[in-house]
Image (cartoon, rainbow over all chains, first blue to last red; front, side, top):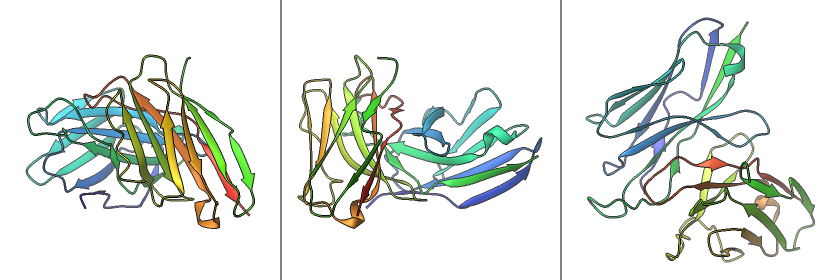
Length: 118
Length: 114
C-alpha cells in the first residue's frame, strides 16, 4: 500500500548547526503534510504543517519544504539546540475523494532520530 | 480538557488476558485516532473515527483488536487474549474535524504483556 518513508534514520549535529530531515512520500493524492517531534516517553508533538498548494512554510526556527514533483518533504531546523534532540516523523494524508474536503487517516513515516551535541 | 488524556499510563498484563485502554480526546474534536508504536519504531495506524461516519478499521492487526467511541467523546481500545507481540505504546490522538487538521496526541499507554 501507500507509505511515507524517510531517507535517514539518524542524524547527529553540533549545537548551532542547521539540521535537515528528509521524507519521501508515495501517495500522489496526499495534499496535507505534517511534521511531528517525539521526545522520549511522550506522544508526538506538532511542529509544522503544509498543504500542497504551498512549496514552503516557515515557523519559529523551522521551515518545511514540499516538492510535489518528486514527492519529497523536508524539515529544516535553524540553529539546532540540544532540546531539539528527539525523533522526528513526517506524516501525510489525502482527501477520501478527489476534490473532497474530508480526509482519511494520517500515515506516518519511519522517523529520524536527531541528536544534537553540545 | 486541556489535552488528550489516556489511561492507564502503564499496563502490565499476562498473556491471554483482555485489556482496555481509554482515551479522552480534546473537547469538540470530532476526529479520533489510535496508533501503536513498538519500541524504537514508527507509528502504526490502527483505527480512525470521524464524527458519525463508519470508522476506518483498516489498521487493526487482528480480530483480537477492537475499538469503540461514544459519540464525539471517549474511546476505548480493547485487546482480547493479549499476546507478547502486543507489547507497545498505544497512542491516541484527536483533531478538530475531517479536513486534515493537525492531530494532538496523548502521552500513550505503555502495554507490557508478560
